[in-house]
Length: 404
Image 1: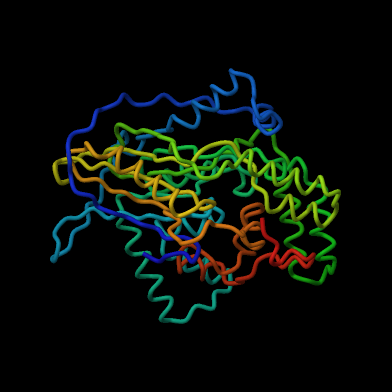
Image 2 (image 1 turned 90 degrees about the vertical axis):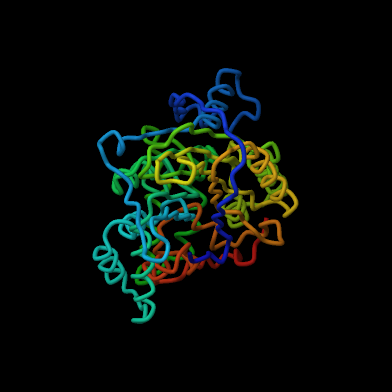
């Protein structure tokens, strides 16, 4: 596993305890309409029906076992040293911005290599060998835990990333919504200032980064018919997913609605405009939702005790280590009575800081996507070389070093 410089990704196999209760397969929650998402931004306390609809969305997973229903079975890799084993991959896929690279990394090494060549990769032969080794391991995975997975977002071309990846890989999937992105910038509504400022920063038509301006304009176009605004965690599995649950943490650590809107109001109260508004719009990230755990069971006679419970999570980064510890304690409490092995996997944001200040590079990447303009901060070495340009939008409006 290659670890991002931003986060520590962890997969733990925990000792068995007592049995867990089985639940009925969840029924899909209703998707929010575009108008309802706008309302969730505008109103801190929306009408009761909308509050209920949002709560249902944030506590009910989407589950599809289409692969198992079609007769597809786990790979069950083995080795002479270990015999049969369960290969688990955990990956923060950065919203699915580099969707084709992620898909090819799991399914088609030749296409992945071609994609690297197309992007002008400067990887050395030793680096390419390591990439090929990683891809070989990814191809053997029967269980994937993916963090930062978009559904219906401008920046990822309105894809249902979990569903499309699962279909490409021939896997079942469970998807849990962590946040609904309600910020007008993310939705493409409040785009005029930010597009103008970016265009002025890169006015030279001969600069290759002028291409970025067109990308930003394209991404910023609102599309009410396709916008779903969902961002969350997914479990993809070649085993049937059973007893799937979506459980928000009691301890959150950061209010991504009230706290983010509060920062926005503070800057506007100072009467600053233009570049200052651009910075404010860029750095904030207003959304409704909560950090959570997505839990599912897989069963097979070859598994220890015949069953394994998978816990996928993404701990809060904009908080203290003590709050993250409390979130981990909630997970441990939830699985204390499970009587078979448990796999805990996710982006634990393990650090000694609170996740702020946020870099402008990262904020730009979050807002507009397209790995072509990322800094070299990919979640895996393979993707870092698949996006070799290695620089983000170098906006020269006094943004570098700007913090929350």
